Length: 80
Image (cartoon, rainbow, N blue to C red; front, side, top):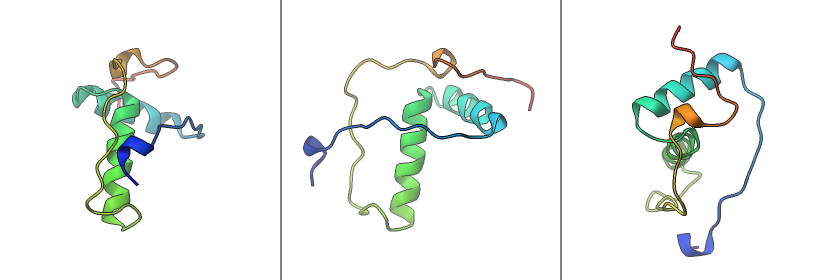
């Protein structure tokens, strides 16, 4: 299946607040939105474990992106 036939789907997960804050900080350091950061991280992990074909490419940008610090509902706690 090509990326042209794929779409992004919304999903919700309950995670430790410290994990969410860490993800927001890491995304900000990587100059990515939290969503894009997580998608890239999990895509690479899926390829490493053989769940996603090694030659698969992630979906491209479909619209403008927001910075990690502006992601709704996420607090970036600078205290680790």
